[in-house]
Amino acid sequence: MKRYVFNVKTDDIDERVDTYISRQVNEISRTYVQKLIREKRLFLTNPEDDDEITLKQSYRLKKGDSLVLEVPNAILPPIKAENIPLDILYEDEHILVVNKPKGMVVHPAPGNWNKTLVNALLYHCRDNLSGINGVLRPGIVHRLDRDTTGVIIVCKNDFAHQEIAKQFAERTLEKNYLALLHGRLHNIAGYVNCYVGRNLKNRKKMAVYEVPHYYARLATTDYKVIQCYKKHTLIKCTPVTGRTHQIRVVMEYLKQPIVGDTVYSKIKDKYSEYGQFLHASSITFTHPTGEVMTIEAPLPDYFENVLKELR
Image (tube, rainbow, N blue to C red):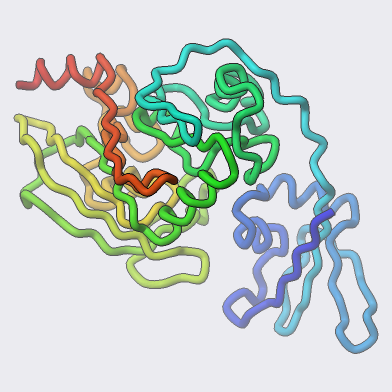
């Protein structure tokens, strides 16, 4: 069982407790918080005498409140190996680099226990995957959104995982993306510094904040225009940080959303039906053996075909 402790700040006074907790812990939805409260797993503690009082979900926070939430360990279904074809860009005894297709989820989660990249990896690699990230994410050191295509590194052993994860943490590797945007960008290049955090009105989305918030983290994105078309722009993006949905939400913030992005774009045209036009085109990193490598992933056919039509 995991226990979360929350100390209420002045800015949080009078907020509903279920809303507050779901905002504090991204991986816990408000619906699940309410379920835990009904099961009497949320307590208001008194530091003076260690008394614990169970709360209702409608409780409004007060100054000085100290909360404890108990979250039981999840009962995980067995993750099955599935014979799903992989577009392998590179493979050796340490790592595997895959060109992920559109529509594939990286690792199993509620609602997506099958047909994920992990299911395919378990079949292809058998037991040769790092175990640092647990049974749901064997070998997984970074992710791409379901509808983002392109290059993703998988680690076959814990040594490789530690080496690659360190480069992500220290931002010493470089990931490049190609994105097709609605509209024409006026600047040929740009550098966006902002704060990205969970959207307070819709937890499935992220949002851009121009000033620091305790629930938003610094997000830095470089971009360069590759080609301007009549009503679209092709750009190369290099995110310095790795926030959830970073490129997608930043492009929405710039009012140039990515074509086919069903979450962050309200614009529909004839190309939107093909899906999301965001592709992780290359990654440059230091292999666990010390060699600097650049792996490139070719554009998916639908992306390449639309670019030919736009030209």
